[in-house]
Length: 198
Image (cartoon, rainbow, N blue to C red):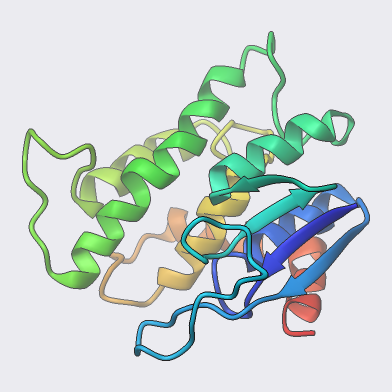
């Protein structure tokens, strides 16, 4: 049985979305987490090494970090078509976008949110404007990051971009807005929203 360790209104919600897209049985286990305001605590029931979410257990085999969970699930349920497999011409792009999410996309937005300068030439990430330019270039080849093919990578990026829409972190872009809306209006996202707080 798949168990997703979850706390409402966190990054783990997008993994509920992915599980709903895959259409596989899973259990949600609500755990406490440390919050930005200093409240909360690490939940001993959560197997994540830092008590964060999301964390996935597949009959006791633990996977943590959103991109790793996305890759694990799309490989595990390959027949659902949400991630190109080894040998597929789009596998490299898929892996790149998954890795880029945690190593470039999120650090860029967190840096901007905190008002921290990105150390040019030494950091593994870049400023938000460069990240957005790379996403826009990819979206110029189709409605999704992999062109015509919707993948788990779109779940990570589309939900984050929808959340940032209208905030000072993200400059207005009709293409980014349309992309984010195409992701968060999917029926699986709506089902995830219902499940996420229960």
